[in-house]
Length: 320
Image (cartoon, rainbow, N blue to C red; front, side, top):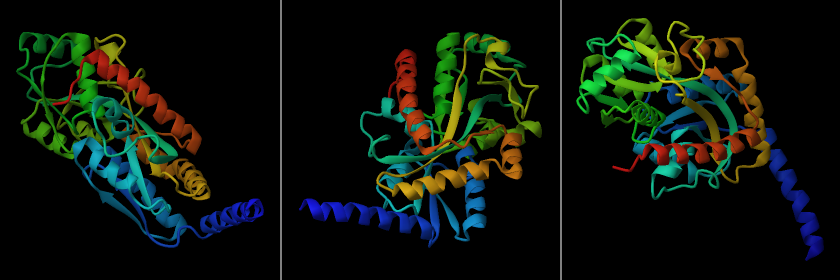
């Protein structure tokens, strides 16, 4: 029996190595657990296009929105672990949701293998142009004078957009009504249309409309101003000292995907993110490309789950 194991283990390693050498031999699917045109979708398409160019196999973007990313994430978790189904994830399903939902159809750590942290992104506080406030201090005064009367939109219950507003309300002693959507595209459309008055969500999805003057940006959520819009102050500068939230996006595969394939995807993703046209495109939208190792991304997810569990507890956020 021992001799058979001694033969089988090297043989398995050779099979895995051979699979990586021929990978990819067919189209790759990247699941996006949100609607098209949002930041997750933008990043997935940017990576997918370059993977297609490099490897000659089509990369299909599969949008499966719903339940704050849980539907698409569960689908990816249960997919065959062969490297042909990947997931572009966010801080929601792999940071916030494990501490927010009593029951998930996936384990954010055990059911996935990290490939790469793709980008970090500021959240940007934007308001409808008709709202009679010009900066964050005026907004806080308005909210305190009109508690609960203003509504805000987010790309999903428990999303970084939702949690960022919950943190804002907790730190400023204000109150607003939450209207969740299935992605940033719906939030942005209703924000411009006046159905909602405020959002504090991922900057890349909002940058074109901010530059066009269709919505008004009041602050970014990060500790430093965004190079993509240096004229927008940080939340701390604008009147909420100590306020910081950062959204992030990364590429995952189902657990048990061959390690050689994971490493091949990780190296190629890092290479793509350093390409001048990709780096410039993402930076212009407000995203900071990263490109980490698989192990670094796995560690990042574990730390994010701990961090957001504390935010959820401190802000007293409960499931609705």
